[in-house]
Length: 305
Image 1: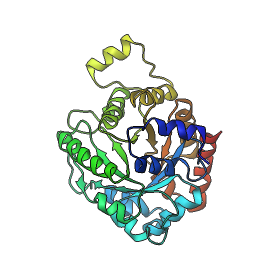
Image 2: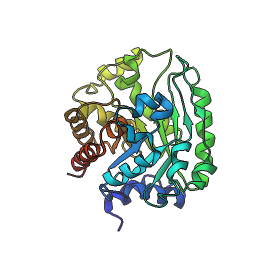
Image 3: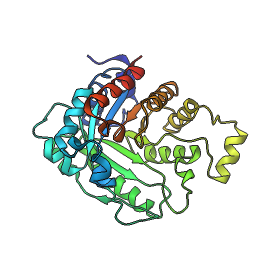
Image 4: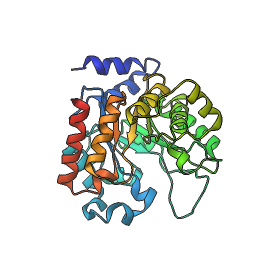
């Protein structure tokens, strides 16, 4: 049965067709957090993005694509996201068991590119063939190649939505115009979140922002308007505000593997700031499955509490 909160969230997408809204509802109604309006999604694109050993050697069962389908199910995640190969390896065996996101572009680290652009590695047709509920796409605001990525996303989002698929956008600031610290600066992450929402993302994925301010003109406004930089919950609140004042689902990356206490503190801040949840990859599959399930359940309990 549809909850009041899920109905409210779906009302933010009243310009979308019934297929897109149905697939958003699939995510919002699935798993341990079903009906709460919160999401915890398992993403496993790191084999392509970082390399197999860096991603899976610490927990060798994770080399197997089927491991991740089962991990998402055992933990009660709202959905599972991966590139074409991993989804093709298990979508048939796990057909209909959880909502899937096909990551349609990917980037590797074999060439050190200061201004990255991901290669398109899948299609909307692939997503339909594999029974996915959504497509995923990465953009790098700040890269000199950003305009091409924005245009690619516009075309893919249009096709996906026509077919009833939701659109999830990884919006990660990166490029020669930004310092390393600036990639997670509050003003830059807020800008990246806004860009993703303006490009038609149904779900926006960003990294948790730091209190650093990168852009000189933006810094003047942040200081003049007294936009809070601390604590983390206030920074989350500002990112949510930047996603159409909370009228677009925004979820936060779990980042590199860290301790349980840190992840639980981050989840507490995300909830307090009005964020919609987390998308946690390395902090899930780089632990043993029992440890990962226990951790994800603790995070979900925070969001549900």
